[in-house]
Length: 110
Image (tube, rainbow, N blue to C red; front, side, top):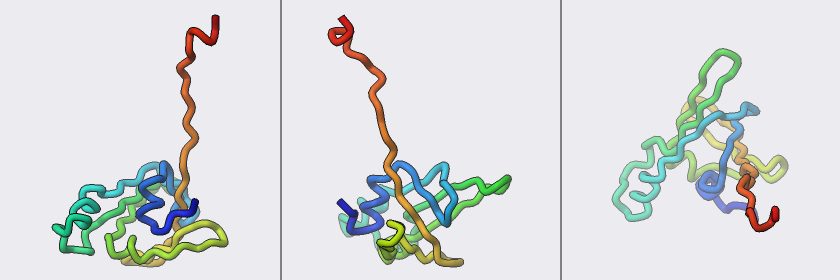
């Protein structure tokens, strides 16, 4: 099922791609989200999302405010989110990782 907001997509994501670059790390400030939910956070300009990437030899960092993340638009054609940053507009894709269980049940092997 398609997430209804970028915040929902980020909460379920394990990996991100920003402007065609795979991010090696991203941080979603869940504490700020909790404060907003309870009505105690008053600033939509605080950074909610940080995306870290290595582009060649250059380390790049993008920061997006709560307001920017809430205003993100879903683009159905490529299943991305259009996010307006302080410097430019960015394309963000959320991915879920596959997980496996390496533990075997000894009863199954016998």
